[in-house]
Length: 238
Image (cartoon, rainbow, N blue to C red; front, side):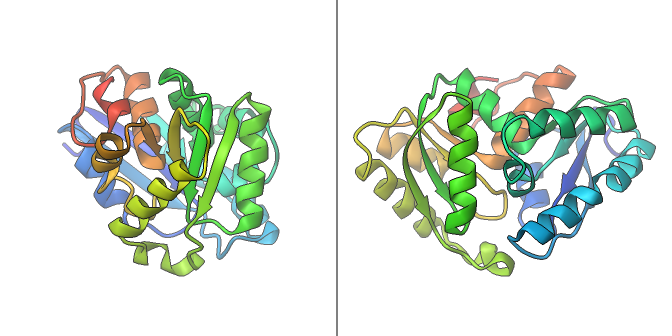
């Protein structure tokens, strides 16, 4: 049976490119993804509003699919609404589906706290205004943002970012900050997982990729806490 061990609902803001592939690289056998998308078309306030208006419809569908946990993967949508909104959207999804849930920024915050990362460097594909919103959001929760490095990808071409781009940006982020406890790489559509081990080993800091923190939160919630190797310190500590 598909998802005989656990069925994890995944509410994606846009198309699935690398997400499903990377998800199945991480999760143990028997854990399945049930994916839906609210199909935003860019990094704009109008697109975020459209995506948030579709959350209820998408959540209802995931509820029908009998998921064990639901991930709302929308850093841009949530941080655009300000600190505290992540709790509102998680509560809304859980109320509709009667299923425990998280949203990507909440999972990231919990992961950063779990690894005692207080002074953070951010590497993202986002445009400057979205990075500023993310920085403000994290600051509200007591994090210090030591450096932000944007890869500046086009919304429809995030997957064109290379492993070398991510590694180089991580290195620059550490170089431009006085001290960092760790790195946070939001967005699941660029190849953070492919280089996470090299970043941690070579640069000496724990690193939280978007998808790793979401899967970490999901597996902890459903009681699967076996260490997972190959994708960074966070999942090894599960």
